[in-house]
Length: 224
Image 1 (cartoon, helix red, strand yellow):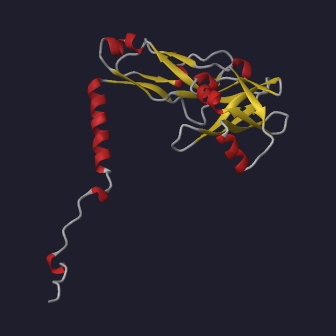
Image 2 (spheres, helix red, strand yellow; image 1 turned 90 degrees about the horizontal axis):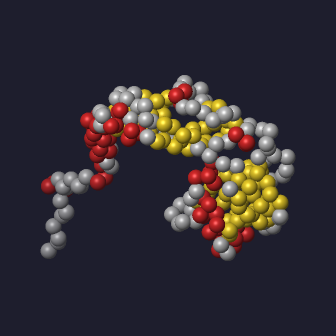
Image 3 (tube, one colour; image 1 turned 30 degrees about the vertical axis):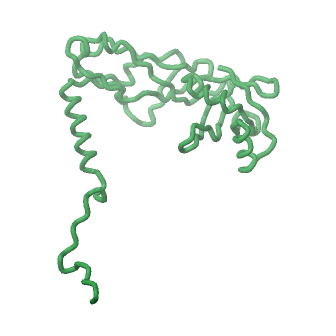
């Protein structure tokens, strides 16, 4: 995916504020053999690009000063309540250096499984993305997970996924975590009821009505 960036001459809070008022978003490109470089992007174009999954999980082609370079989106700072992008960070990509990236998991065919079709179970997606390590050329846009073989009571682990060539999972010391679990409809309803009960019990005590003041502490009568 390709996007256009422009060199940013001025830095500082005031300069960034003026950029945002003018419909631009400040950013930075770092990493590789070059020095960090301040950039700016058209806010509307960036806003629409951020809605696309590929912009977050693939190597991007950044055009800057008439030259194209490979980068990864590393951080996005959003306004707390307005639909506005405040700042973006990109990292340069070296074709010979392995990347650590989170890529989305695309689940499919659960409705064709015995667990859903025959036993009417509920399929829970425990995680929605997976951290991997690979060379830039091997970075997948997503990892497909076929759920057509699920059965009642089954669990699917990371080791059950067929990874693309050149891709390895970054486990961070976790031993083969669960990515999908299958539960009966009754068990799923029980979990929802338990969660709702716990949420109700945790409601702030301040929401309870204030107790009436004791009779002996009533306001004194007005003087005659």
